[in-house]
View 1: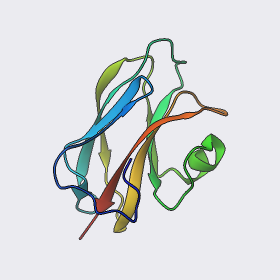
View 2: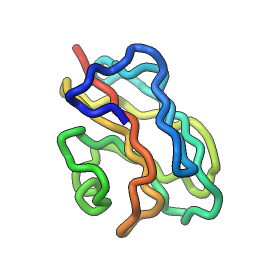
View 3: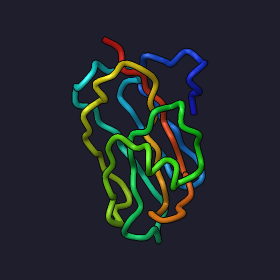
Length: 118
């Protein structure tokens, strides 16, 4: 994971471990532009596991807090891998994709940070 006080790389960013991975083609995006996140997940996840965009200033780990502050999300519906498309937030700043193993008290399995720049 790249914290918001570290410089983000311009090349593909992959966060892996814990049986899950997230991959972004770039750590930088323009406001409102489409961006993709590719994922792989372990087997046996509930149907309501989700990946969403959350402002980086929101503490990692607590699913209820992240759920309240997510800007967009998609449920992965038992898929073990794939690519999801999102619109980048309109406001410049630091954000992250966060993968939760389930809704309702889920655990953050992985995150990948990115920056929205004009």
